[in-house]
Image (tube, rainbow, N blue to C red; front, side, top):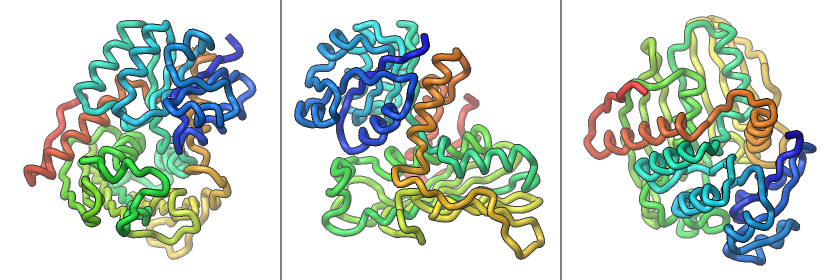
Length: 340
């Protein structure tokens, strides 16, 4: 196979980044888009459908890109499996809860279908560069990683209405929708955590879920990671959604600092000067073009039959950690995680 036929389910806000990425790939043929609002589906410029089963029957895609909210994902995956689709990418958050995600993963595996979760933050260029620096020993033995989430979009009575209004009614917001990115990113950088402790709260009373909180992760070798999130505060950036905050990765031999412009800086232990190891990001879309990086990875892996990151079976670990975080916040205690 040298050309993948790709169809998309969902034409909402974030689909623009998926479609823009697919359209830039020479080895992809976009064959259709489905949305319950047929006008939105047709506005993509592709053959538009408002019925997923009909789209799958008429377009016969090799891969279905599921760009739907959690409550619609299981039905879409089952419809695709019933129509013989053997490869799917599914947006996060993955399913409505851990139990549903486990069931859907098992059903896809039983059908011999590949299911990849569209967790793209680990594909952002600054985290790829940080991983390379860590693995190359540039900062010595890592001791601590801190990320401060400050997207600045959660203030006021109109919070989230302009882009993703469903955020307002999510009973679990900061962790389930947003911090899952860093659960996975910390796993990518540091390995599987062994315990978590969380203190969560709601700052803006007009929304249903939590929008601020602290999560402490224990990682192997005594390494600690801290997620410090507050959607009502901002950081220094011309585009608050580029990095969504700032990071500091500290090792015995030096540190890496991520700024809001996407640049990554190295400081040797005991030194004052900083060295830029990744220049500021100039991508005008989302997150350093991480959607394209992830989708390119999936296509390349499918065509070359190479190993894949973010398979659903592996991603279940993120949801297990998420569940432990909420348990910690509810009970006020550190939760030890079972080995994966």
